[in-house]
Image (cartoon, rainbow, N blue to C red):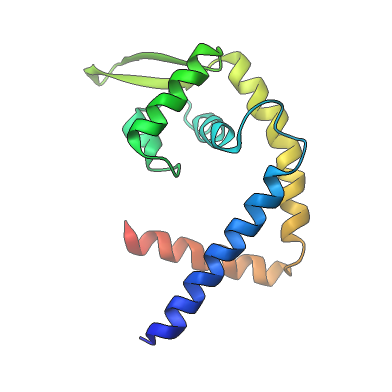
Length: 142
């Protein structure tokens, strides 16, 4: 393994991510939500029966304490709800409320357009390669 090449690739990946995220943050699609809040709402939209905070944390870039505080704020705003976990009486699950689902869908439609526009710089073949490589990196760390 060429260490310099690996680190150059890593730096390029992080720079691309940071650049795109800054651009997304500057758009008007967020409707009073932060990108991190939307990330949680989006992740919960894929969990039909809700999920535990520990499982949610695997999909968002927040520490457990920060994620718990964010979920508390979303709950106060009526966007998520906590309920008992049928598999573990000690645990709680977090799920979207109807208001949370509506906000996620509304933001998601506009954000998806912005993502597609940003990714249009790549060909279909490049997008497939990027997707494949990203999945490979995730699988290798699981």
